[in-house]
Length: 430
Image (cartoon, rainbow, N blue to C red):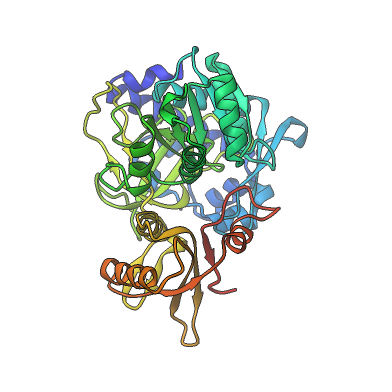
């Protein structure tokens, strides 16, 4: 099984990756219109690249490339495409990722590995609190991986705390897969009804879409709030549609484990050079074993660290930290560099705030401006003073604050075309 390679020696892992890399390069040279052109334009002989270090001889691929030349990345006849998925469009217009039957099997294996890494067993029952439609790859991946593991599945879809809780009581899942901020909403609902959430059957949560850990892998405010109210084990996971692979925590909670037979990972600096361990870099991936739309040195836009010290679980793979930020979402505000995730952590930690949306725009002199749309816990002068003083103390600068009604904020956060709750609106360049 692919899962076994993570427990083998690092030398064996490296040899496996380099063998897979050579197969990928030959496949791209033969089947990919985009990469054929890239190799030709840069006078690259793919047969000369045999080691992981030699990957740096190949130019990186960017999100702009994938958006502009989407069809040129397809390596198979359209008759072989079984599933069309798309990115969420968080950092621009969505792109289509086409999968063959083999790609879907690989995706199932990927999530099987991930759930096993997170302590999953065939005796588990998973309640999926996320969408399985709208071309959402993660939904079909979770479903396929759990099915491959032989565990039970409850497809609930996102939202509706009352229905989620009623289903937990009726069908008794042992685990949930959900966005962390929604888990807090579920906790609040259960508390409001006077129920004991710790008496439920749920013992663990696979957390998707939002960070639950700090850079040092300790639980952040969001993770602390969940575990303070609900005695469950949290597992963080990181993935994207383009990479078709997940990085999932083991029980040690020290970063998401790399699946070396499915993907090569580089963390690159501003000059596209690899950074050492424990140093922020842009996650850059090379997919292995994909037929439909494989990617070579694709820059995800996500900034992470990697850890290479041994893990207590016995796996010998590198691990990725939580996302520190997204390169295109970096904010320069009054001389301070911020990522939205840092603002989210601050706002999640304030009892004076019930909900929020962060909006960034460009002012008349071309500088970034931040507007926080907040639902306050109380519309009082004292509450307002606490919010502004806290932001000033933590950020050393004060963003603009606007108070909104809960129903107004929900309209900002949820749209018919979006698969995710929107917490960040970027109007720069709009």
